[in-house]
Length: 527
Image 1: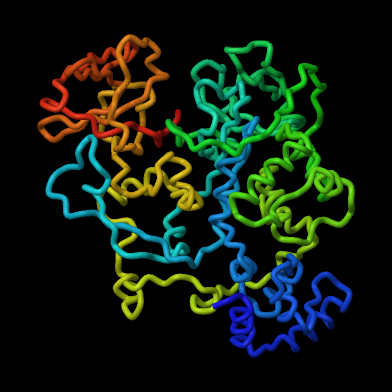
Image 2: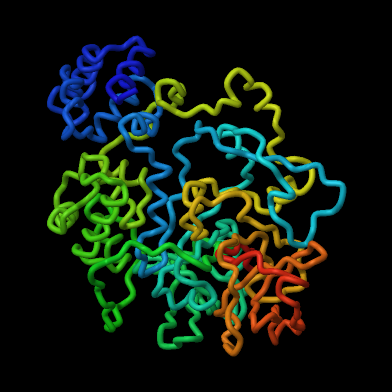
């Protein structure tokens, strides 16, 4: 079904025609308003070069009471998959991710626990513990979340976060810990990491509490970078970091043809203030990201190439105009691109574009109209699907209770996060029961993603333990061990590390043990 047919069916389901919609938009907004929908809109949409404006989509949403994001999907802007590109932005500095779930009525694969007659092993393939069991609406799964967290991606120049984290690490931030005054007990050394906002953007850092409500951004690797700031005046604590998704093997980021060098001049601290308009927000966001107009334009070209749509490209001159002109862009691809490049929430850009989001439609569009794929298992057997327990009674229930929120906004980005093409359940291993701590990165780890095609360990002789790859090893008795390993001849050695006082394990390769694969991603708790 093409978009014109979907539009016609969506209007007909509300007893509307294009002619009546055109009249209503003229009455509500005016014939010369950007919200006006012309009576010959079908003919215009049939042209390949025709672009729907964000104001027209809002008008449809208001008149039909169908959700704004559903109408965007009808016109080819499925936001949840598109926003996976935010993980590939070349971030100089740490940035907050937009974790909004737009398609709450999508069918999402879910799983249940297998019948387990024994305790869950210390390390085990996730597929041994749970199995796929149909699909559920995303809204049903979102109801499992007990709290909301912030998510941020670490930039490659965030000297306060490195080397404890790595560029591209996704950190979860507990907002409640900003309210309970946890930072007041900080001395900087081995304390909690906090996500803070200052006049130059965001950073992930340890804090030293000082007198008079002041804090020091702690940076033992580069003491000259330490900064003393005033809470509420030029720094805001957003929360404490409590978890990390640490990439071991990443997809290459979007490439820039040039990179603006950071100025060595120390700028005076400025007061924190909220931008008052669309242009001011773009200026602040671009400078916080450390991007020139040419840099930002190069990223937009890469976005356009990734989505195979030239309308996502924004020329340097146009980016400059957006910061000075009163009228924000009306074209949806441009707004999406600005949101991706500058790490601005999509709904915030919509509000500054003049959309009264408080009067937008609220009802989800039926599957048949929006073109939402309904799995065959759900057709005619919805009651059976509804009866699938969401959180189980054992392993799954305790896991959800411990983590409190499942980051469903990352579900389309698992290939990007893990560095594995065609990521599947068989690529995930539970390591939460392993207390041997053969490597510091596995401390408080819950899951690892494993590339089962990479079975060749590192060669011996390199002492950079923390920088070496981790591997999953299957022993002859059916148990697993995870850590740094080397292979010399037929001798496979899984190394401990000095501070952990854990001895090494030696195996005969292919006889006593074999390499399952290389660890590409680690999900672990922090603090």
